[in-house]
Image (tube, rainbow, N blue to C red):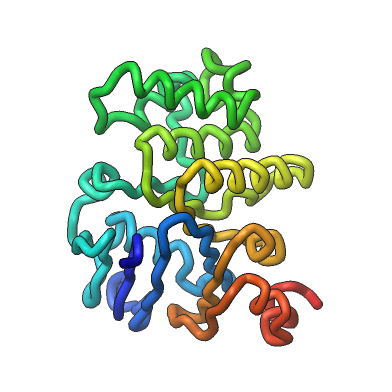
Length: 236
């Protein structure tokens, strides 16, 4: 059984249809990436999975359990964490308080502190700035905080939306190293990333999304070698 199954999903913004019969699966332990141009429906896909946007039709199942239509907080409790595009941290709160808010659905205090220490191991810079106000962090540090906050819910599946957007190249490399580490520690990942080449190099499999439709899928290696993908998304 797949960890996540999205089947025949149609999602609208008002009268505009953003997703058309979208279907994908993610197995336990994988990194799967969605690639596509701006406006293709990548962010809408993540929002539909995490309950921020409700599909008009279709199914979203986590380990066989239907979750489409559930409120976002319930979906977090079932095991899906979401680090959204634009980071969306709490700018007036400290790094530590942002992280603790990521664990709002939990009541296991000692384990929460253990997970905070895990985040600090993944992102030593956050540990150095743990008492600093979130809004005073650099863009890269805020991205680290957004990922760390999502990890605090102990997700089975972590949704990452453009984690390298706007970051300096050296920080981009750091973020992708952390994505690998998070996955090696047992967390399955669905990744949206503007840098399609880096996303496919870290992923096991990928889907290509165009105007709300899946038009191609395959192993990351096969997509990297695809002339159509190279021409459209890799600048080759």
